[in-house]
Image 1 (cartoon, rainbow, N blue to C red):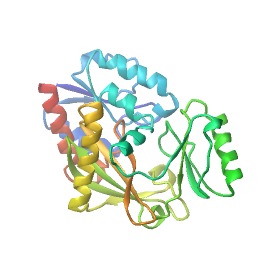
Image 2 (spheres, one colour):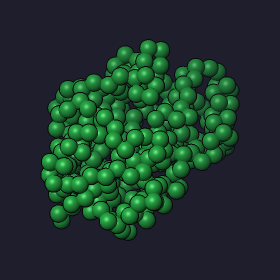
Image 3 (tube, one colour):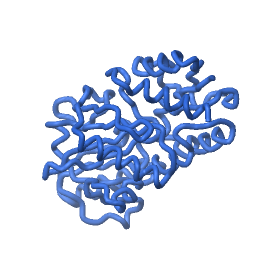
Image 4 (cartoon, one colour):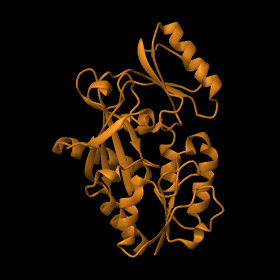
Length: 285
């Protein structure tokens, strides 16, 4: 069997964090290659394509989605093209909320006439985005906040619009908690803590991450969220559920990452082995 771990040009073909996954696949007799998703590569010559470090997709979303759909006609893609189409647009959170999943209060702005009341202290995030790209924290009067949103709409017309949420200060104290779910089972937890004075939890912005022991209730909740998403879009080989704590101390889903999330293989644990096993099992069906 041969697997392509899809990447992108700004990132090396073999990242330190991907090593355990490659090792787990090789141990199962799988040949592993890591082409950029937009490379001139014979995708039909592998048994499966696993989306991994395709971390430029958000600025080329239409092109990336078209590639996913094209590749999916030649070879099995994980997660599927339908999952990608649903998950790259963060309005999936509205659908999860409608099905009972707690999220932070959100104002969705795809055009200037959708601008309503905004929180006094908030976060502006693109509807199509990754790695905190075009994400702003503000603490200003409502009129100034509206101008910030309008400016972001004008500067980034390809990101599908913006979402505005209240700033949850727990990100500075506790960080963002992540539950990694493989084949519907929560296998590990991660805590991501921003740099002092920052709110962004990505390593590129100086954040740190570490293993986190999820409670039984937290694990069950993550599996429930992934189960709800699976009922909407179909089979999910992998997922990462990101949580923040609101002002009442309640965990709310910040994002459900189904396209190319970091799965933090570098922290050890069962994640790489579970993902390799799930992928190999699917290739044999």
